[in-house]
Image 1: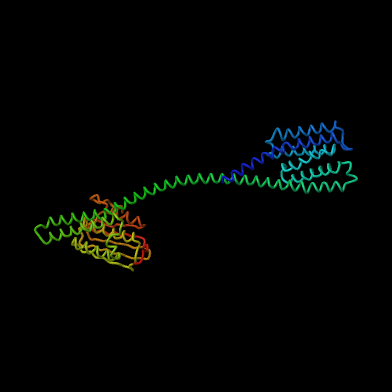
Image 2: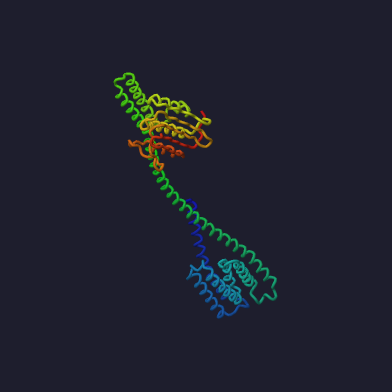
Length: 422
């Protein structure tokens, strides 16, 4: 990139020198033509009294358009007007003295300031003027027209070709400048975009970090409720039952043992939750078996009949789906133990093509669901709210049906996302 910039600088220097040279060349041609017309006039040259005023006017014409107004070089209108006048002066001077062919030559230089295809017309006229000058002027045309034609053709081919290649090179240089400018602008826009993207990236990282922290907090809140809160509630229930059965040694020992088992299970699940590990029942068994084991332990612990049924063809599900259904079953059974005063509970796990449904029904006291929304737990616990959040988080739906004295039915439907086969 540094080499390209240095090359551009050198090119600009040479182009500036070239522009300065082209501004001086017309005066040099006029000076040479005037000098030769003075010291070596041809037989058909007009008197100096006629030639010198025209040469002076031509110098003033060039000075006005080229020297005094260099900014006009990029304007087609003024330069076209200048070129037509330049050809007029050159024609007059060549007719007055063939030596002014040295001045007419500048027509090749300025021809390419004309618009469209007119530059080639300017080259042709200039070639004709040079051919006339080289063949001795107009008086000799009638007797030596073939020589004049050869001179014109030679000038047109050689000088026109050189002028054309110079014109093409100039156009390519301008195109290259435009491309370099566009590339520079594109690089600047790209750099600006990169800077903006860096800012957005940093902002996204911050937002992702904040979202991750919030998501982890919500996960820990659910896990704490599903493990510690449920376990502590069960322990309190068992200890209260043990307190009421002090006179019955066997019952007292059974409730205390249940409380100890709940404490150990809660501690194990709490440790697994901190490490974001799946619940232990799902590590060692399939979901239907884990639910059956859960129902059996819950029934033995609370003395309430619990049945677990599975319909459809069991199949491995995504781990998050299985954890959601297991936690929903644990929360539903915990609610039955705390609030329902039921005599029996039924759990049904239904495998269907697109969804898997867990239904938990009891014949307990029930409650008034009102407009169908889940009411907050009376003890201020997470309860059904946590269950709904879990189910909704995996794209599922939770429905609760209950009425006072008519028991409660909870249905959790989740997508049947496949998991790895065991």
